Image (cartoon, rainbow, N blue to C red; front, side, top):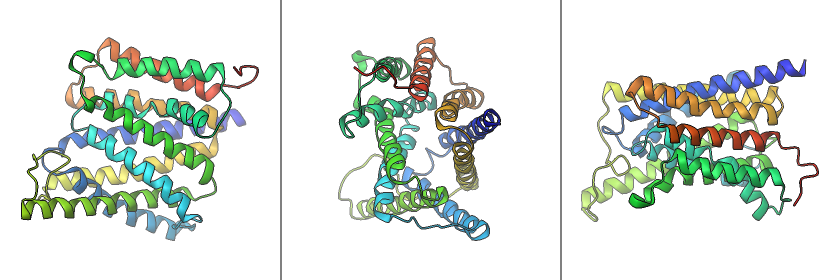
Length: 305
């Protein structure tokens, strides 16, 4: 019976990852017409009412029990997602996703450094192969290295911090409450950034190139609205499915299914944009998955250094 629950939980997570992979691939269709901040603000204006309506219908709590701790977790998640989505305008989604999924590596590093957890052979091994996999997946080349190459990894760093705070402080919180805080928070930050960019545009304080990150507020096209609405709906549904997956199965088993995002994101990118994946990138993503498998299934017995 437990095996059935684990399989169902894993399938829920895989389906949620598929929806998120499809949604994230469509970001490329709006990066040249609207800005990052406008995208997030609009998506939040759609997602927040959906979450409030869902809680009103199904019951539950929309505001967190411990606001301060959830607020800190939300900040980490906002940083992670802003860097992640910002990177999609400059890198293929397969590379950005690989950077984001380095988060288990940083979970181990931060757990050892900040939480003083014990050091185990399996965890060190996972960090080493995961780090090498990241080097390959992101096609890091010291000859033409740029600080931009580190952005996808930075998303993984903040996502790891969000994961740790979720585990330590937010276990008893309603998943919809955590999603509400995230969407509300990232929408609020985006509104502030839009106002700052508009003021800069009006008073010509600084000269900014028009990029996905610095675009002033643009008039929406029907295509923009459709993609953002689709992304908001799929993000909410995907998030709920992933939460259900963790509720049904054992975490160490179902967490592995999160890595299906790498496959789904790369496959969708190939189908939509004919993005090619080199053998080194593919091998790097495989190593990242292996690293995650080692972390998820580590028993931590008789392995302490």
